[in-house]
Image 1 (cartoon, rainbow, N blue to C red):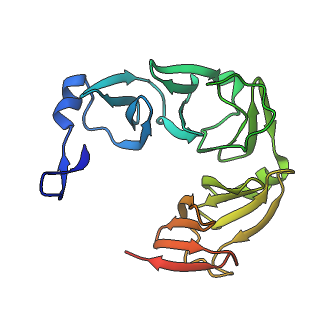
Image 2 (image 1 turned 90 degrees about the horizontal axis):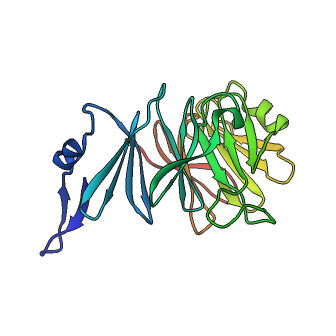
Length: 239
């Protein structure tokens, strides 16, 4: 559903369950990702994808196991369909941009667009980006898959969950075992872990966000933490 203000200025929730059922959505199925794209609002479930546009849903069924993994890359929604490959969701729906054979083995748990460079990819096509699985970190480009060995070794066994660029030269990678790993983009080398020892309230990181003021926010299992310039964890909220 969605939230919108009514005539009194109060926020009201409008359910779209009936419209989803009418489009053929299979209940019960969990929604894992929601993305606002130029072509509409996309809801990504385990094996189905819905797009709300012009007052109705479009539906795509994408068989896979265990589920679909969706990521935003520089305003473009990409979806990893295990066993099939990487899909880019455009105005006409999802289309295959990388086959399973062109991807590293394993589930793509996170993806981060790299800063603009002399990338030869044409307009609208996916440019070079970083992607992570449970076992490694890779730089994926047009026809290329490059393993970053030092960064991959650093996150081995740490259950990586998410990543975000702090600036054009620095990557923050969240894990479920060791907090946040800071790494340099140029050489793909790990710099340091931010975990309980330097002050992060919890080592289990579910999501990371870098705001416009250079602050890094981490959604932890115990609440919300802000990591400032000194890169020390500060508990902001807990439930």
